Amino acid sequence: MQLVFASNNKNKINEIQQLLPATIQLLSLEDIGCHEEIPETADTIEGNAILKANYVTQKYGFDCFADDTGLEVEALHGAPGVYSARYAGEQKDSNDNMDKLLTDLSGALNRNAQFKTVITLNKNGKQQLFTGIAKGKITEEKSGDKGFGYDPIFKPEGYQETFAQLSSEIKNKISHRGKATQQLIAFLINEE
Image 1 (tube, rainbow, N blue to C red):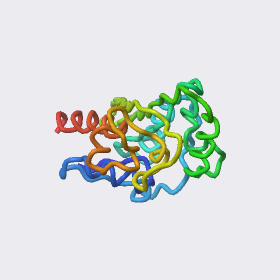
Image 2: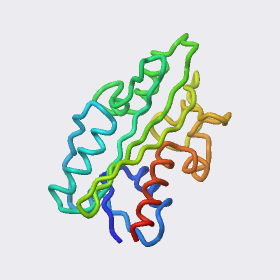
Image 3: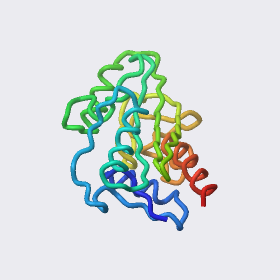
Image 4: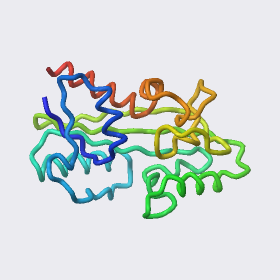
């Protein structure tokens, strides 16, 4: 089965392809000839995942899934949330985003945060949503060189390491994206 993942983020595509059964071949936006930036104009994580999936299904006619992820920080009332990728500006630079977040949390005692991923699946004319949450804390400084995004400053519950210090095997099991993807995979396997 071929399924389009509405993303050109190679890190995300590789992370999810590793989790999928061999019977499911993942296609990127590039693979289907979609080179435009899909608008992410919703004000929720769920809304953006739905927008992206619907865009591909309506414009290209493929069954597909799309995800959106945000980092929600308690002390910042859920920010950066839906604006996580462009928290420090439209350049969408991970280091700038982490630096801004660490500055905004400077001196904060409450460093509780959670990553939230929502995956929207459009398949056979039906839509399903899957949500994965990883709770943890924002560290005082960056640690680790694996992963991407905010991984170097997010320490998941039950671990002394940040996501950027953990192996991809462990991260895929406990991460927000891993949890949402496991639900997606279980759904797809039941459908086969």
